[in-house]
Image 1 (spheres, one colour):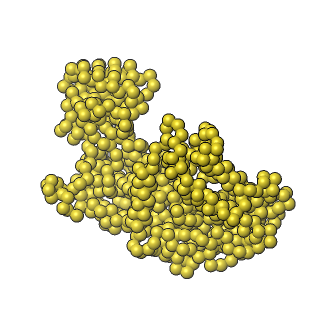
Image 2 (cartoon, one colour):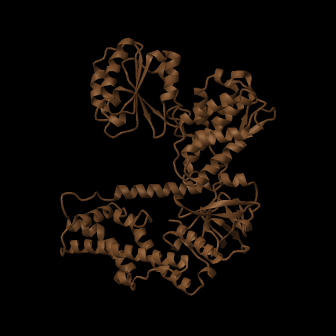
Image 3 (cartoon, rainbow, N blue to C red):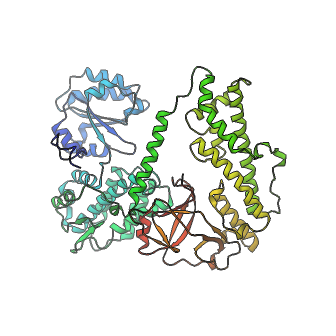
Length: 613
């Protein structure tokens, strides 16, 4: 919509791309500090160093990374640089926020040389001095929103001489692919946890390192080793920030897609079917191509599923609801015990817990009566007995803590430090730490209590089926377990014991809509949900814009089999199974038949979840 733009006579709502040279030439003054507000993971130091080398020379540039023991040196350099007309950059002021008022006083006493510039960098901080904020030229330094602005910023930082160096079309196109790739992986963070499972701090430093690799290796257009380029960019630059195997697979797929032998040719090449890559070394042509891009970033640009916007909106709504709960929730009571407030805020937890335990005897079981595994028990039964034992102990711990709170409210017990800690966490709708350390379940206490009881009760059914010898013959819903990944490993141990083989000789196998050959302990998993695709029979197909965020999945047979009996599935993609839709914990992975290119499915970030909270 254009209506918000008309009254102000502006062309867009997004701020312009930050260019330090333009900032220096058009806005800066010797008596006004330049405060650069950085976000976590961003680094302005190298770009500022490059600008200083071009404008005043490195001999007239001083950079101080603030920390312990640097205060006196920084003040000495402030006086020296202001007198001699040098540039001074004091980095990371948020680390020495208590010292900043002293810096502010020294700045006010300066009579600087006309060439002097004071650059300050800091992450946002609530206690940053207001006066220094008001008297500084403020600029934010972070990834510009959208692919177009991101690439525009990159090409503003790259000079025509750098792009046109060596008159190599292949080199210029490789740099353009790098700018596109860097923008993609940064903007893909808008689709967490489906785009990436977490926020990875890809920075301009990564872009600079990647450009340096291309500059060094693309001197001879005829001997480019693309796999070597992929390995360098993955292992030495971008991949080091990623700690999820399946996210790393996405990064690798992007590298293979945009850095290949098709670069440098005369044939027209489109990036994501929206951006035509110029077959030239002209900096102006690449800038023109970027300007012709649409401002709207459709999911197809990232190779994400068509319904990703619905997923994103769902996650945004979920986050907003959580923020509203934080705003609404009361502060932790201070200055003693307020009986009325405790009763008002904590009674709902007490009533829910009483309701959940109606007709159950979990809170009354004696520790000596909790069944423990015997040495002769199969590994799966031993796991289930230990799982239930730990669950019952946690139930009784929760029962004890809530009972103590109830007694304090009634006035029949004194307030202890432990009770106060538990109540304090519940006051702000957070799970008490002494519960959380025993089981990392849902973050919301109400969901935590419900899930704790439902899983503990379900474990009774699992144990009964295991004792009757029918556990592996009936479908299993892994979301009923506290630690489903440990169950998968117990199944591996049981298979190795029954086959009389070393445990490391077994590999995990999965089949949708069929049986696994030579499987000794197969089990069918049900209750899974898929994100990023749909099932057509037992085959994965693309979803539509109106497809639900989570779709049902047919039963999947899984088993551990000998390495020699395992055959790599053809036309299948290995999809991770996560504990929930937050994609924080990987349980295992399942091979899924799919239509189309495997790399396309990797980029769609298809995954299974055990439950949706």
